[in-house]
Amino acid sequence: MIHQQSSRRGLLRLTGAATLSAAAIGILGDVPALARQAGGAARAGDVDILNVALGLEHEAIEAYQIGAESGLLQKPVLDLALLFQGQHKGHRDALAGAIGQLGGKAVAPKSRADYMTSLNIAAIKTQADILRLAQAHELGAANAYLGVMPSLGGRELAQTCARIAADEAAHWSLLTSALGDALPKPAFMFG
Image (tube, rainbow, N blue to C red; front, side, top):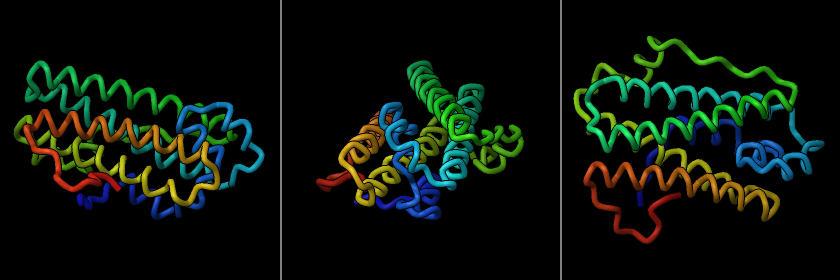
């Protein structure tokens, strides 16, 4: 079984899986009706949690941009990176909107120099280096959503998290394929 922790998984553990309200999960999963239904139960910490998630989306967007501009990605892989970047932009927009709906202020992205340092871009020399960085982040995200599911109070919330985890797992799988890595043999590749 793969056990790798990313900053997203750390976020969910740091804040405690139980602190994610139904509204936050609904908003993160792009399920507006669920978010509205649970809106009155939103915890004060939801804005903070969503802002940390938004910060991670900013980081992912910039990481894919740095990779795209590096000249290291070959055409089919570059297309895949830009597709994933576009999906992260959609996540960013949804999170920023949700933060606003909850009465909070969305965190701004850091500078490129900050991301270059935090992502250790100086160590990246090849296309495979870029893909491995993205692969690790996508695996961590899939595991984070799977990790939060058992603490949820309702089937709808678990389903929302499962959909998000499936998206992240798909990203991981495509990156793994692009790297030419074999899929793990254990029956449970995530979680």
